[in-house]
Amino acid sequence: MQFTALNWLSDASWFSTKMVDDYFLIYNYRSGDTHVLNAISYELLELIAQNPVPAGQLKEVFAQRLQVTSTEVHDQLLNNALKSLDEAGLIEPSEMRL
Image: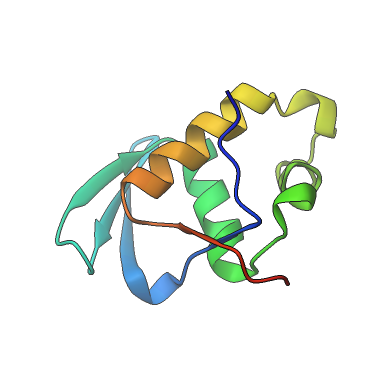
């Protein structure tokens, strides 16, 4: 099952970040919750917050950010990270075309 939207949006003003060891503590100002993210999920969140990317281009742009090929970014990994970030309220789907 693929977790998709036309676009994913976020805003750095929605959260604050603190790195602890190899993890990132993300405090969500909108919900008051704190979330623990691994480096991959954090990089994805930062990418979306800095520059909304159309869902069809997200895998390629994310791979470039990680300095790997798009074939090295597994769909299931990307979809699981998107789902977790969405459920945490750190990103949200948008039907708006970019």
